[in-house]
Length: 196
Ligand code: HEC
Ligand code: HEC
Ligand code: HEC
Image (cartoon, rainbow, N blue to C red; front, side, top):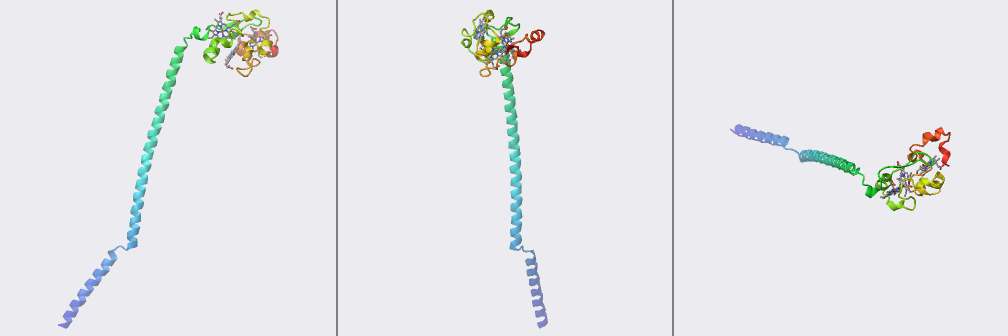
């Protein structure tokens, strides 16, 4: 009888010990829990970071599209402005002076003057030239003996501005004013230095 009692106790003990052992095996150590928590946090952080990156990408794309849209608008504006500019090509002689070029044939052939370049484009007033430098009469200057390069280089006529300061210097780009003289000069055996 005592043996049976002992056997039962032994059995109960062994069951509880094995239960305890099993419990200990499955129970996570605090370190393990902490480690898993860390992994969880890391995963969450990564997810958030990924989402943030995505959002930033979307925002950047949206911005790019906006910039492109702006650029297109600017292009449209420029086109519109150009169209308006073309309409302005209906040059207003009352505002800008006569449209026809003034061409002198004396002393050399083919020196051209355009009001448009000076008034409409360069923004000069009529009284920048009239009547101190030039009369309002095509060909008037041509009648004068001093209508030559020397006077111009000294600041007379065109040289009042074409001094390399207010406008390109008269001793450069001869062909810009002399639209038809270069060939004639060569025929006369003169060089480009002729006016100096
Ligand atoms: C940069 C100088 C300059 C400016 C600015 C200028 N002109 Fe003249 N203009 C001339 C010259 C040069 C002539 C020819 C003069 C000559 O041949 O002696 C001339 C001639 C003229 C003539 C005579 C045209 C002809 O066929 O007889 C008129 C009209 C005239 N200008 C009006 C104007 C008006 C209006 C303005 C202002 C809107 C103006 N000019 C601004 C330089 C200028
Ligand atoms: C009141 C100042 C002034 C006077 C006078 C003047 N110009 Fe000009 N000219 C200018 C300015 C400003 C420009 C534009 C800037 C530049 O081209 O250097 C210009 C530009 C020009 C151009 C255009 C150059 C180009 O880029 O194609 C020509 C051609 C010209 N001038 C010829 C003349 C002739 C010819 C005379 C004399 C009959 C003359 N100019 C008298 C101020 C003047
Ligand atoms: C800003 C305009 C302008 C420029 C630039 C210019 N000239 Fe002239 N030139 C004139 C004008 C205006 C006259 C007088 C009108 C005419 O002869 O038809 C003239 C006249 C002349 C003449 C005849 C009168 C003289 O001075 O003997 C010669 C030659 C000449 N130019 C050479 C030159 C040479 C070379 C250059 C370049 C180094 C030059 N020009 C640049 C405007 C210009």
